Image 1 (tube, helix red, strand yellow):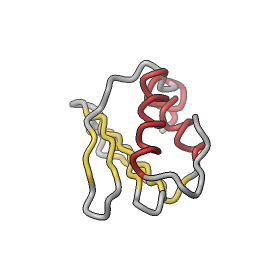
Image 2: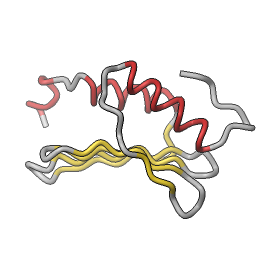
Image 3: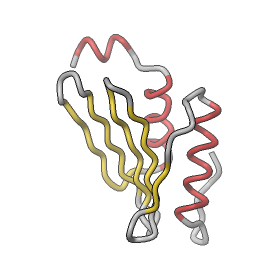
Image 4: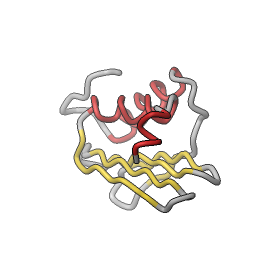
Length: 101
C-alpha cells in the first residue's frame, strides 16, 4: 500500500485501501462521504458487516460486526499495518481464530 504523507487526503487514502482490498480478492464495496469530508468503506453481508472510516485528518477507524452473534470489535486511530491486517482477515478469515472467539 502506498505510504500516507502529510499532503494525502481521505480520498487518496480511500483509493489506496480499495486497491489493496481488490488485490486481495474482496468485492468492490460501496463508499460513502462523511460530513467531516472523511470517507467510509463498508462490506456487508447477512452474516457480517465490516467497515473502515477515514476522517479528514486521516485517522482510521475499523469496525467489524458478526451478525450471527452480535459480537463486534472496533479499533480507533489505527495505522496502515492494522488496515492491511483487517483487509487480509476479511479476505481470508482464520477459522481457528473464529472457533476460539
